[in-house]
Image (cartoon, rainbow, N blue to C red):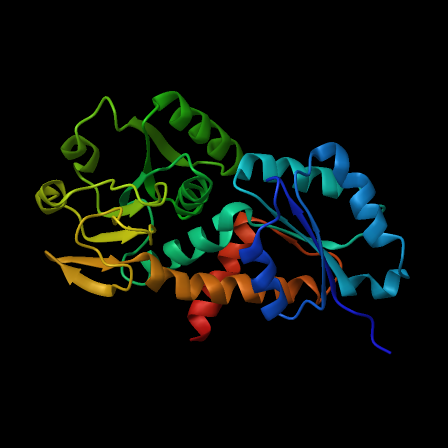
Length: 291
């Protein structure tokens, strides 16, 4: 009898994510072991319980996924999971706190369909210090894009820039404050705008959007009214608004779901996969190329 595909869900929030659980089951996991409020100190015993109950040649039937609203806390769990491995005695692990990696990958892949992502592109990420925003910045920086990381608190944006420059050699990222700067200044010279603020928060109104002369593309990742960028509907997919190519959250979300399900399936192909920002972004590009 074939072993069940068991997915250990480690969530930094008190309640494990229902969304992540549904996607995991739809992607082929047979059983979920869901734990909320997980700290780095908890991870070793949880991972060992997953690893030591099966022979090494069957460990690809077990894997772990890390979720929760805080991607920095999720990164700490991922490091703790890696430290729990013993050579070949290990399991595959995916980090996707708050959908940060899968959503960001989908957004940047959509951007790459229309813009030549590289040093000639200037981008502004509103809500750049949130879980999704941080991953968007990281993936754009990896492509060589010059990225402005916008947050209400510049110190928070500075912290994100510091972490990304440590993770992405040569990253061109700069902190910006939405409190201290006019939106027109933030958008000056920007070609790509991605809004990844909190749900239901409007980040950019119509006059500022229309006044952004160099803007070529805008992506709004907020599906909860009001929209993050006024005028962009959640279902907009490569829709022209004032001469700019625009995507809404649900249009990006279709690709995000494909990436998320494909990543879960990959966890059960071997026991050595570590799926974080770079790996999930690569997967997103492969899925886009195969379409």
